[in-house]
Amino acid sequence: MRNEMIGAVVRRAIEHPEFRKRLVDDPHEALRAHGFALNQADLDEIGRIREGMGEDDDAAAVHLKSIAHQYGLETRTP
Image (cartoon, rainbow, N blue to C red; front, top):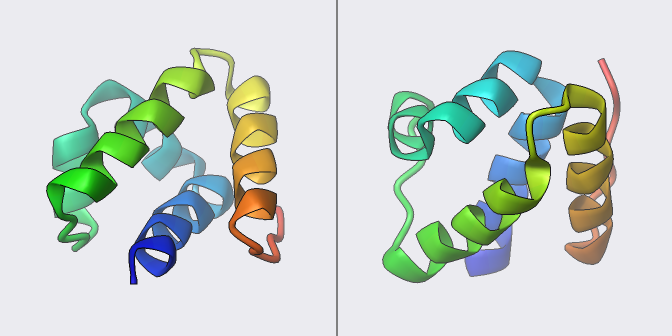
């Protein structure tokens, strides 16, 4: 289940730039607003992912796609 939840967050961040920005700015609010209910281990993993995203939107998208690949996700770019 953990991989599915993290994968869903990563997929949403890849496909929706506004969510990606909110995830960097205020991860707890972004997750809550999009209906993600994550346990502490998942939140910790999202925190590590968030740290690697940085401020540059293109670099963040590349970082997220590499993480998606690790979770076995097929991604599409809007």
